[in-house]
Image (cartoon, rainbow, N blue to C red; front, side, top):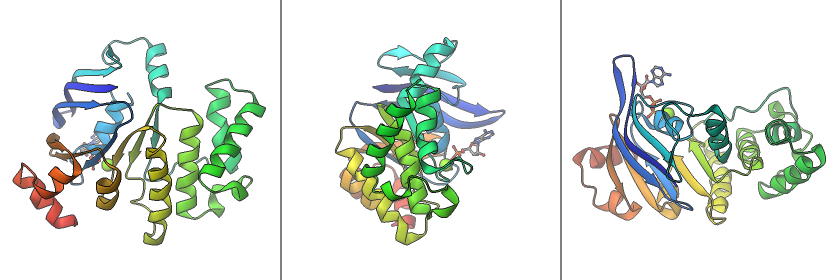
Length: 242
Ligand code: ADP
Ligand code: MG
């Protein structure tokens, strides 16, 4: 379980996150929506300790992992919380296989054999076994993103964070990536997904969180947030994207 308590994050005088209180329970699929610049990416980066809060706390399984924390604990925590980005961020000079086995071998000290075996299993999961020796530049955006998901899964994280994973894709490729993500929700993986895909949110989200100007304005079931939001700002936002 990951918990944010009274978390604030500022860049200089720019207060980006304001008194964020949030619990992500094991196995939950939490969808985060909100306008551009509202702090969604910053919130994800606080969850996996890529950013340190200006004040407040990040707790993982009840243990504080913010403030003055041993680098060892930060490293372990990050290993357990994977991240998938809008722009895939695959290593362009590595084949698909090497993209997937790199971190497990370097960070988890897996043998090459072990890492390759796992990679093949994951390539099956994202239906790209035939691309094992391909370079990212030869893949479509949808394929690249499925590889990026396989790469994140190779670290065997408890939690996966997705930052607008389909926003950079051509429309016809969105569905194949969402299908892989939907498959993951059935494995019991804890997922936090920033997305504008409301169909996905409704279909597989346990909770939807609406972030506006650095504050959480809604945190409820998809049905409540979409059909009877508490805050007029939510209605306004939804009317623009739906
Ligand atoms: P969103 O993902 O909702 O579009 P972000 O979290 O990326 O929003 O950004 C929220 C605000 O924080 C923006 O005003 C942005 O300019 C600012 N910001 C984000 N990252 C940084 C950074 N590393 N340094 C300075 N300002 C940043
Ligand atoms: Mg963002």
